[in-house]
Image (tube, rainbow, N blue to C red; front, side, top):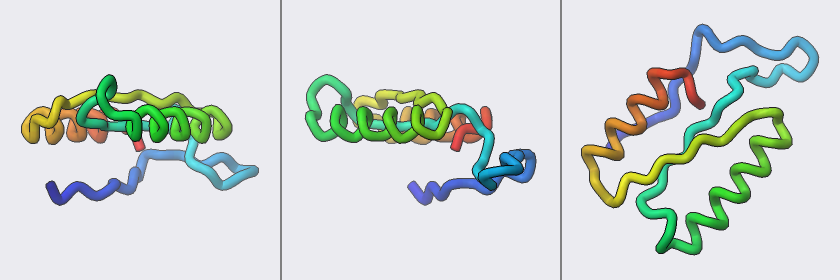
Length: 81
C-alpha cells in the first residue's frame, strides 16, 4: 500500500521525556476474531500504549484493501500515530 508513518508537525513533545503527547495510537488488523496472532499483537500494543499514557484504537478491515486504505487515511487524518 505504500503507507509510511507520517511526521506530525503539530504533534507536541513532553518537555521531560521528549515523547510525543498524541494520546491515541491506531492499530489496523484484517480480522480480530479468527486470528490468534492479532489478539496477541493487540494486547501487547494495548499494554505498551497504556504504559506510555496512550490509548489504542483498533480497526478491523476484513481483508478489504480499499477499507484498509481508507481506515489508515482516517487515522492519519485524525492525528493518530
